[in-house]
Length: 257
Image 1 (cartoon, helix red, strand yellow):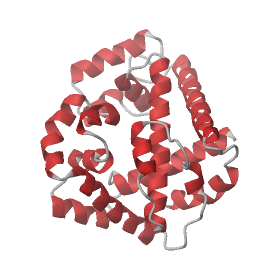
Image 2 (tube, helix red, strand yellow):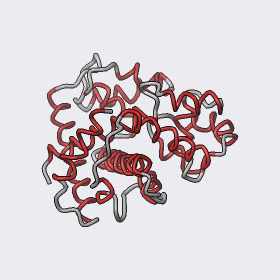
Image 3 (spheres, rainbow, N blue to C red):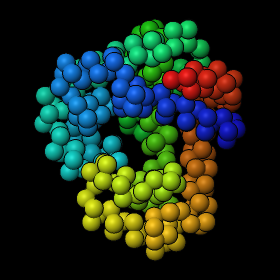
Image 4 (cartoon, rainbow, N blue to C red):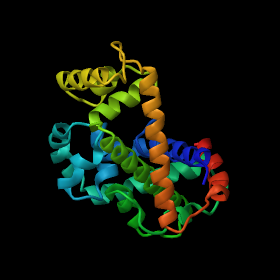
């Protein structure tokens, strides 16, 4: 399975899930749900993604926000009845996907998630029953693949010596954004973010301004290759030795999102 295909699939599933689930484009169906349930901002983000897991696992699963924020928001998330909120979010997101892509969706995505999906959040989406409703099932498969890759990415980062916060700061720099501004957006305490940023500078991965060094770029590419390798191994374990045909059909649909 080619590195190019794996990365195209990763970018495409990330795009559609962020678009429909995390409200990047303010889809009217999601906005209606949010207005009706009063679930703005992180409350929507947390409940719609994590509502399938036990509350005790939320802080560990979300990774990009500090555990203190999860604890702060948990009472409101609990009021939304998380599992039912996930189902309502699926209905809204499926309607948005159908509106954006009224042509029949291609088959093949379901083959990629048939079997054991790595990571508890990806597995939770993979284990939800498929109803035969193409848009809902397509979205579930996309979420399972996205969350599996995220899990494997953080796993590879941890084994390479990055904390979750360091990996967020490092990714922000890789994308040309201010690491400290991104950390603040996700409500990390400034002192903690600065401490982790200094650690990355001391390792020679970032410069004093928070930009990637040449060593940092090499380290980032090595991490991406390792993530690709783990994704390919996960697919192979599910009996998918070559997914190029499926990816060629799926990626244009998700890219249109």
